[in-house]
Image (cartoon, rainbow, N blue to C red):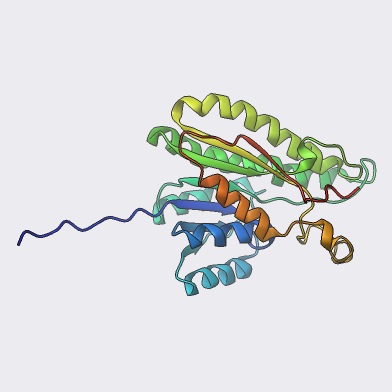
Length: 245
C-alpha cells in the first residue's frame, strides 16, 4: 500500500501583550482553547509562567516572553525571540495598558509619560515589529484592545483618554494603508470591565454593572472567527445596563 503523506496541522501564532492578568490573560486562554500557539508578554514574569503552565496543563500551547511594553528596546527583543523560536506572528493582540483616575492637573507629567509610553507608543512598537512580515505574507490580524474612552468623554481620565484616542485614530489610518495587503485591523473598545484597573471597592460596588474579563475575551475570539473577507473594524462593548456614570 502506498504511504500516506503526514497531515500538517497549522497552529496560528498569537501574541498577546499585557497577558499577566485581566482581559489579556483571558484572551490568551481563549486562543489556546482553539489550538493557537500563544505567546504572552507582560512585566510580571511569574504571572506569565503561571498562565503558561495553566494553558499547557489544559492541553494548549503557550510560551512566555516577559517584557515591559513601554521599554521599546525590550519589546523589540521579545518580538525577535518570538519570531526566532516560535515563528511569524499571525495575530497580535495589543492589550497592555495602565492608567490613573485623576483630573488633568492632578496627573503628573511623569504619569502622562508612563501612560502614553505604554498605551500608545508601546502598542505602536508592537505593531511595527510584526506588520512587515504580515505584509510580506499577505495576511495577518491586529486587534487593539482600546476603551470606550477612545470615543466617549469621562472625567478623571485625561492621560488614558489621550493615549487610547491616539491609538484609535492611528489604527484607522493604518487600516486604510494595509487593506491592499489583506491585513486586518480591529479596534475593540470595552466599557466597564471587572479588572484590577478598577479598585476592589468599585468592582464590588458595580459588580452587576460590569462585564467580566472572560466575557470580553470570548467576544474577541468571536471577532477572530469571522470570515476572512470580513473585518469588524470598530467594536464597542458595553455592559447590558450601560456605562457607569
